[in-house]
Length: 155
Image 1 (cartoon, rainbow, N blue to C red):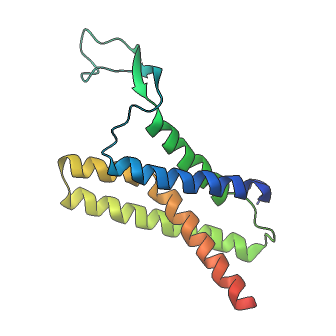
Image 2 (cartoon, rainbow, N blue to C red):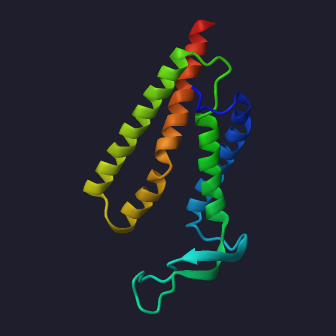
């Protein structure tokens, strides 16, 4: 309980989380092609061959940072939503939080095992990219669903 953020972090978290997911889906539908927000960025191991003789450790390149901003929005928003206190934070909420986290990890690794067995090449890479977000998304959705269901039964 002492590691949770204040309840007031939930609202900005939901805004970042929802905007990040919606814009992320739209960005993925457009095959990640965007010249929006192209700027100079620091890149580690920029060449394809990490251990080649001509490869420097650090390079400055031009890149669209829209995908990085969307990832940060999803992660930051999800963490704010998932790890902010509820208005009434009791042992039952703590149990729901822990069970939701366990459930999210199990589903995430189930998807990963399925992907390892049946997906290859770029399809596997795409699943791995989305798999980066699934524990957080599943945790937030399941936790809030169970809390909502509990509160609707009390009324």
